[in-house]
Amino acid sequence: MAPAVRQLLAILDAAYNRRSWHGTNLRGSIRGLSARDAGWRPSAARHSIQELVVHAAYWKYAARRRLTGAPRGSFPLEGSNWFAREGPAGERAWRADVALLDAMHRELRRAVAALSPRDFRRTPRGSTVTSFALVSGVAAHDLYHAGQIQLLKRLRRR
Image (cartoon, rainbow, N blue to C red; front, side, top):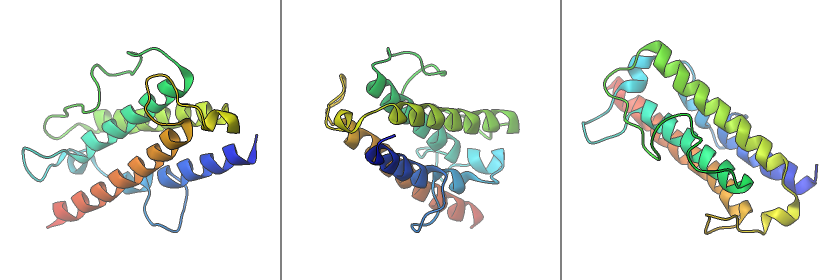
């Protein structure tokens, strides 16, 4: 594997589930959460942690789909971007959503590992940015939502 590909995978993993200097990553932000806490929302117009998790899973899928040229419509859930999760979820549903996030991360990693450094400069079909920007954007997206989740957890404890 080319060093540039290894480096991009390291960035992706640091934002998702590897220890890093910046603090809590996305997977760390949901570690140990109950379904009840994951389903809580500060107001009716705001997203729950569980909805943020499924949203992040969807965008990992969307990035992978763009990198590989896979057809639309293969995400395991019906819909796109935001997926309503009404009321407190049961533990089984919460664990299924976390497993979906993990699976989408693994699939994205596989797609990134198959890229060459030359592919990083290419703009995939259906995208407005290069493959490098797409993958590094997923890492930024993970950290953005990790911060939101950390804030929601603190608000919940009040």
